[in-house]
Image 1 (cartoon, rainbow, N blue to C red):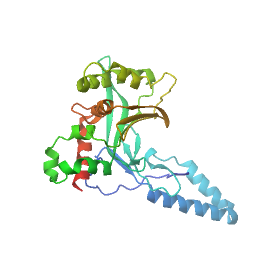
Image 2 (spheres, rainbow, N blue to C red):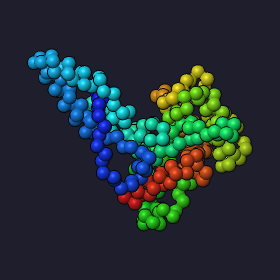
Image 3 (cartoon, rainbow, N blue to C red):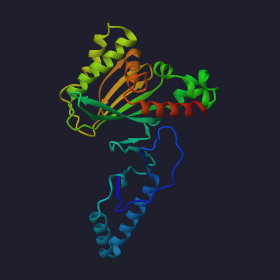
Image 4 (tube, helix red, strand yellow):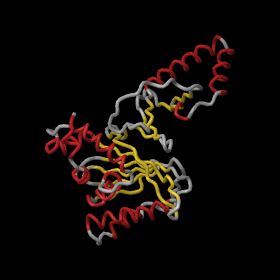
Length: 284
């Protein structure tokens, strides 16, 4: 792992056209150029070790004495060209691709009112999907439509019910959030969706899902919860890289996705961004 901190602000790039999930509130951080810069600095320092200790000290002083903005700090894996997207509202960074093939469609924000007086930012979330799965599942029905025709179509139900690999990644923003609060919130939100799509006789399924969020898990600010829908309608739950359970249920998968891309999502603008990204995938 190579870590590089730039002690200066980059000049602003020219404005780019709007694409899919990239709305104006996001900053795109591309790692390819930084990797090259990191390699240059590393080579330069290594070459000075034997020839001039003074130059080595100067490099160390330069990079240690000038703290850089958060967005100018990159951690790069060897030969990595992965980019990430930073939500300017929360500062949370989402990789543009996870699991090798699932691409980021959009980023949203879950807010919650406290005592009906103040809204707090609970977590930011990114919605991912496998492009090939989307094309294979929906191209027959929607592939021949124009962009304008696709934008008029409401294909949320098809996306949620199809056997498509998708992930909703939650990144905790509110530092005082407890796992008990997460469990309680899912009992309410997922429970209402299960009842909406499957009737009231789904308490056992709801308990099986919410019981995965055990009190022993700590979720400080920056913690990551992945709700991944895999082939065969299997919902896999991962907290900070640790799998805590998996449940095979098309109903549960649909209930989870409905929170973020359904009829009444947590973030309506995020849903529009996601729909625009899906339209682009289907049209290409």
